[in-house]
Image 1 (cartoon, helix red, strand yellow):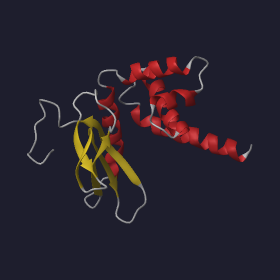
Image 2 (cartoon, helix red, strand yellow; image 1 turned 180 degrees about the horizontal axis):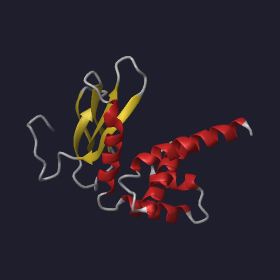
Image 3 (cartoon, helix red, strand yellow; image 1 turned 30 degrees about the vertical axis):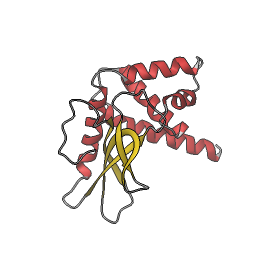
Length: 175
């Protein structure tokens, strides 16, 4: 067995092991577990989170566009995000102690050329250390790590919320 084969085997085993954390939440749905496995493999194989890249990396015998549509349809399933987040938090909980660092990173995605996307709002421009003229969406990510340890544990990521939404409640510090 060549070196590449050994690496591929170990990677598949790690993915299968990690996918196991979702089993309690999706024990009655084989297709959801299969979908999660394909997404995990696709993200790792393509080194990208773009759905088109994930679909291409799966190398199915159908058009990549059809694979992408199927993945998007499964991703839009009601409640799948909360079950995935719940599984990740349950898996991380035993490793969180009183001295564990929880790092929260509010960040943004700037959409410089987007004009018709809904609820675009001004976002922070890190290079200027102020709110810039660019429009976009805010993100928030949280990870846990032990002091002096290189291992990080992802806890949560919230995608693309906007202070431009009419029903957004602000503490007065937002743009």
